[in-house]
Length: 401
Image (cartoon, rainbow, N blue to C red; front, side, top):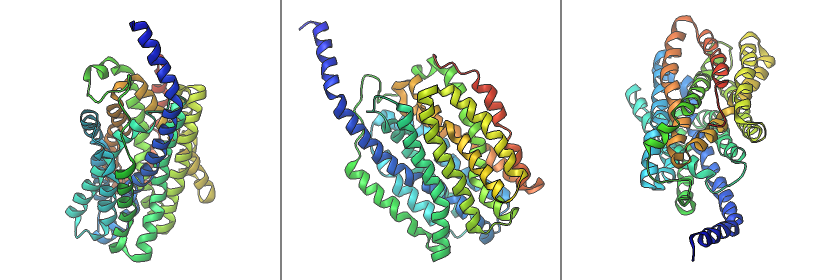
């Protein structure tokens, strides 16, 4: 058989299996999106506990910010390490064990006996969160051939909705059973890990993907990757600061109850999840660059409106700011994976983890330290101006790179 005939036969074989591959791809997407919901539910657990932990242990805002920074470090900044390891080993345990580990340690923060134990439990829970994201995001749409931004938006938004539900979930547990019994929240994570152990299989290596880390492939696209990374970093400054400090701000400076403050974070993140889904769909139709520009420019007036108004108007502005700010989560990720398709796990870790983590590790403790001196509202309002930089940076994107 000639090489031309073999190639034709291979192409025909691929075409005959496209339908089955897509069906399996959608099943994998549904499974990983379900798990992503619970992983990110635990990632927002600390922000739910913060007002209670500050009161119990007499923490300063700087200490609360450092605790949040440790979570960001372990859950986000370490993601490239897990991305490289998962690309090298191809072991599914990075995904399977993550929900149980995150659930056990984050849900059990109410059992901590002091600040050092809080830091240790946060770090361990964060490691579970970090191990899930690179491999799961690389596999979520690996077998889906069309409209990848749209389907990646489903995966990303499921996590954002999990983050949105987390504050209400953990606040309910603490109010119903007490802070010492919030370990009950680990049960869903353990059950999800058991389910993944029986159901989750890695996508097979295709012509575009690889299980080997290739630094040269990343270096070849360093400039467009650097622009995308910087945009994620800028968005993450606002996103991370709000996710960690919004309940404290609403409770301390706006007079919300602990439960109402947690629901305020739920509102912000829920609209962010909706924004991620809309952004992914719009990117498939109008292009990623345009969606990023709309996000960076569009969120600014609503962020300002949140700080300048009160009551229901402020909450509407908060919701719309979250919706527009988080437009770009799936867009940045898919654009990065398209640039270096052979290193999907590592690129996912850079875009979803390292950028988020570096932004959070620097700015959450910095905002906490600043808030002790000028007030939390002022510190958060200053951070809200960063999308201005993002808008001008987005203009440098070359979608043909």
